[in-house]
Length: 300
View (spheres, rainbow, N blue to C red):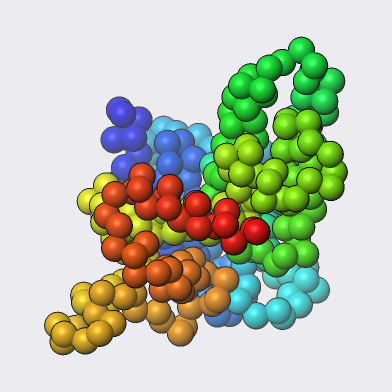
């Protein structure tokens, strides 16, 4: 707590960027539609940041410091970057990376989440190998505990974000996940997926994406006071825009400027497709139970 209070004024030292703080892990965001201007602004902001660090007698781990370049368009800037100035912090050249692990999720510079999916596939394969060698010694309840502790928790972490990937990218993870469930239940390969998942009490990865996205939207509607403001304000209700008593007043405002791959778009879109019965359930536990049952039935 004392450390958080100590560094809490970092944003005041910056003039043309946004900084996100999480414990001792900080991320600086610079936005511009011109690559030359972008890098120049970044270097100026890092000079300001360096001054703050020196005044407050703090040090940066340069080996763990890097930068990523995100682009809305698909322009090829690789050749241009060679001739552009480097990103520098305290006379240390900051290296560009294509992906980075941030708060438990692998973010890539194309935001297509292939690196994170590959990481999850490796995680599921590893646990599958361990359980295959030990399944004869472990009762089903122990195998379930291992699954939920070491696989399910990792799969569902940030699934609301990475789960929007193309089916072709997600498919290898689905295959590994199905194989693991079969192993845990000791079921043959031809077992129907509905029978497999209903016996185990869970649903496939693609349906978990729908469940957890709907769970987030439900919280923002019914218990918004328990959701961080940075999350709840991503979703805007029509009633907060105007006071007219229209039929869609209790629905979300969907900004067409958002990409269909943005949770600000697909979250409200998915919610709008739910039945009125599901949308009107205020209890999160009842909602999840009924929606999960609905998703499971869709596999028949």
